[in-house]
Length: 356
Image (spheres, rainbow, N blue to C red):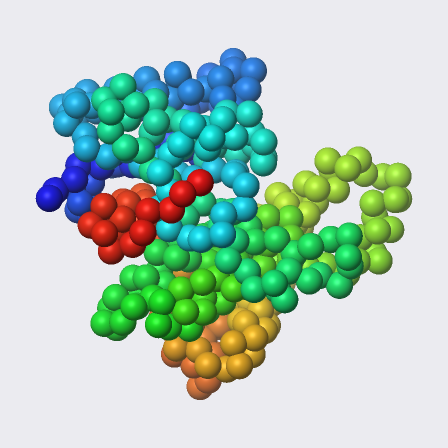
């Protein structure tokens, strides 16, 4: 059976939307929103009707009717920790949690709400796939070293899982039969250990630990951070901004663009080269940690995300890894495709539909 899917991925100032026939892309667009237009709404959830309209306009432009669509798929938002990766049916409990932002506020919270708003009147299903809160940790990975603080699983689950399953399929194997280290390299960096179909350990890519990234600090020395917090020079929110947004390469080089930094390196900027390679060095250290956490029994290291387009950066990482393990590179983060593929696997009974 064929399924026409409407895939919806809300961002802070845009809504990505696509139509897929099974896993074949039919039409897609990034619908950008004027910041001043969004400022008219008193809350994120208040944007729901506005974003519904721009999606409906997209369908009209491309001559599709809602009644033609079989399945509606939204980007998963900030939900309670979910013990299994995969595709989840959108339920009233999920919608209530997202509507009230019980576990955090993020534009992706609108994904399931938008999908459901279209699906429910038509009595069609709505789904989300691998939200960032997938938590398949082994218990030992939760231990931080301080009883008051537990390590949490917050990472680029959608892209990591999709990349791992894509690689397994290309090998003629099942994801559940492989051990993989998947590195998402973007504005945030997450490096996950995928063991037999579960991400048993991964750094918290949002205000947590791991390598520094283009705009996040990752793991930093704790005593100096405490001193900074109590210096009286910064508010709590300003400290958080220094860690996420103004951290990483932004703090050293004033930009989060890998392309800009590569251009500076090509022009002989040794400072840009040093910090770009320092970020790569941190990535390699995290890969090494995951490699030995799996007792060196790793089938491959997979590198994905926007920074995977940077030949300079990837070549630097590979200079450490190539003699030790198999490395494959999947540039970009094709979230729309990942959402469509994840839903299709469930509809075709290749994977079990998960319950929220």
